[in-house]
Image 1 (cartoon, helix red, strand yellow):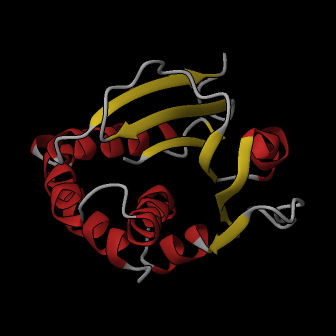
Image 2 (cartoon, helix red, strand yellow; image 1 turned 120 degrees about the vertical axis):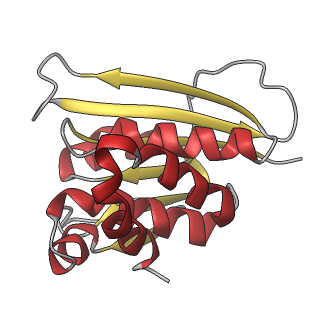
Length: 175
């Protein structure tokens, strides 16, 4: 039975909490046990934002993440702050558009994704979080792509429906 402890961090305004929520929703749709804990800095936009998600096949006894199995960082300060929270053998996804100095520890696997550059190439820098989410799902298989597609459709519905197709493309840009 697998338990994944994921920490996602970046600046407020980068959509950190949104992709954490989306991951948690998709995990629930996959009939997994899941917890989601968001944390905001006092400034919101430009301040710090992070969240933890625990996804498991069995009941989760504690929603707190003291050692993550997977870290996703969207900026350099987040890597500096959270790299030590990843357990040995863990995986670190970095937004290499903003993180220029990668992982220092040799016991971690680093996956660099030019999320910012790819999003700009798609015409909207704000989709960098969805680019990173797509890379995370494809590389780690925490949840099914099918259910993540359903979550995308739900999140980008109603007033935000005009954003759905662009975010779908962003989700699939990293193979």
